Length: 92
Image 1 (cartoon, rainbow, N blue to C red):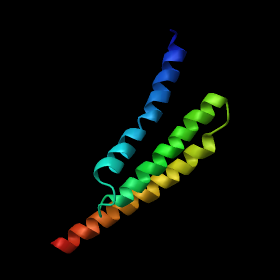
Image 2 (tube, helix red, strand yellow):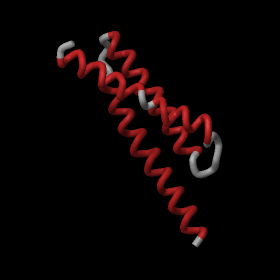
Image 3 (cartoon, rainbow, N blue to C red):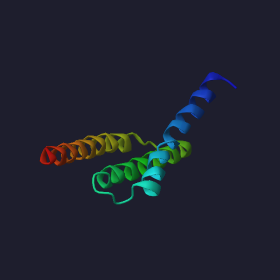
Image 4 (cartoon, rainbow, N blue to C red):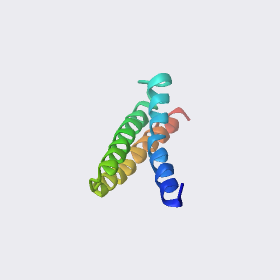
């Protein structure tokens, strides 16, 4: 096994492990108020990254998907933390 093949295997595995938070969300915290928005992020993130792994294996250019993923990450994580902190400020 050469280093390039090992690098590709690790890269694919790291992208596929994005399914783990998605599965945990669907199993334990589905539709619980502070976490439902974060769960939508996990589902979108896992689906886009799984799609990029499949397209990379087929030799399709997938860099625009990563640019879309960066925008989704910023918007969803900002919205999640903004809601979380406003809920916490209302409790105080």
